[in-house]
Length: 598
Image (tube, rainbow, N blue to C red; front, side, top):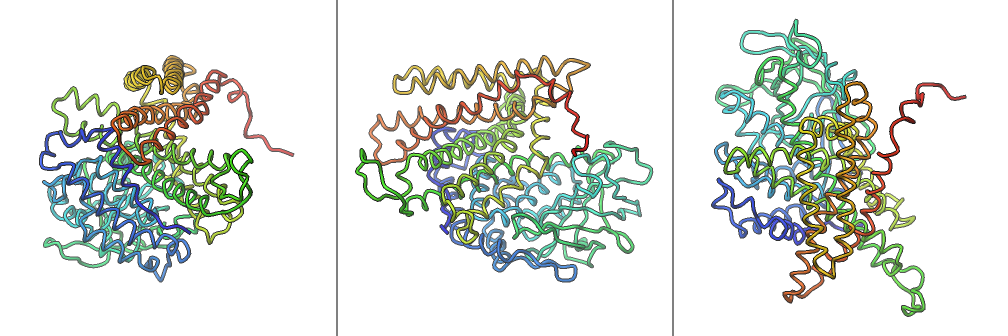
């Protein structure tokens, strides 16, 4: 089993050369320079590599234990989390006005990848806390922000999202947890399932954000409100009071992320769990989506982190493993499996895809910075429109690809990959949850093809396609990169065609919903392939300039190889999704999936 090394060199390439540190030029980041960014990346890498990564296997083997109604996390997890909190990492992207470090989101996202590459199960804990911080900062009242935000930001307390119930998964309109008003608070009664880090021993308090209904609330989404429910009640001076009426009834036995406690929480087995209304009554789902949108981008980052670790492990194993002989034209000697072209194909596929997804996710994060800190409303609104289109792609496409990349990692190991001791299998098991939670990837596709495309007639996506075309033209102007540019231009035409088709058919008042449902997943895949290839085309241009300027070493040459593979070997797989969309929806409409088979 190999150790993890945070991909600092490639992150610096994306931040400094592809994005040109544009976020640092925005209002509010005047005192943050590239030297500060470099120091942050180096220190985050040290914690990820030396403290978090060695616990990844331990967490998988030991898992979490339910002892009474308390959860014991794997050996070393609590200390590793505290080291994270004491280092100030919980508040890296939180505004200074709230007590955070106020760094751009693109820097926070780059660091988040390191946590998940090092130890996805442990990384989930601060991920949920970051989402809770954002929700309270936007929707909490002054008292809630004063009492709860400082300790969430410094990591003394952690946060959770409580949406799912046994009868309410993706359809949250079925939520039945009840919040009964009582003086200045509410008493909650109900059960929530699949609550990530819902109970643990790493922090002194856990702040649950819970969807529930007040008595007499209307049915459906409009009757749902959001409540803050602490594990321990908090006194006015910030000290902890008595244990709230919340019980961890069970831990899920999962395929992966064994070091992350996934809990069933019972609220109000006795007198009722005390909670406080966050935001407006009946707008809980809207407020919770503040957390959900942030969480979806972070889940995409999780997938990239695991893909990076799987790639590193596959490269190391392939270089060490001696099997077979090179062809006579290359010496005919006994060789490492990395000398076999089929293995090289797998390795280059893993490397190029991971790099491409990282670049797109950080591009999206940089657009988040512009959306929050841009100079004027028009710039901010345009950036937000881009973010809205990209988030389902970053979440859905990156996590689907992460599963494929982790599976390829097992294939590179051969039979040894199927053996748990190598660690390759853990990465596939861990990665498999990411396409499921925070909205399954089918839901991400429907969000993109339905809500996002239909509301502006595909305008935001068209702006991105225009940028892809511009990069394709720039590539074709360089003789050495002409073929890559031609491939990218053809893919951009495919995405433009599919976008037009989906917008037109989606607007049909009678059959539009069927069109969106039929085409959504292939459309997301097509968009993901094209936009990731776009980033690799941009990377090729930067690498070519660096090589011509005399930069030595292998980094830029390897980047050119990755870009070529992405554009001419991997992108055609995505382009095939246009053919699927053009095949139509009739087969899906006619198929009777509810019949029994003999």
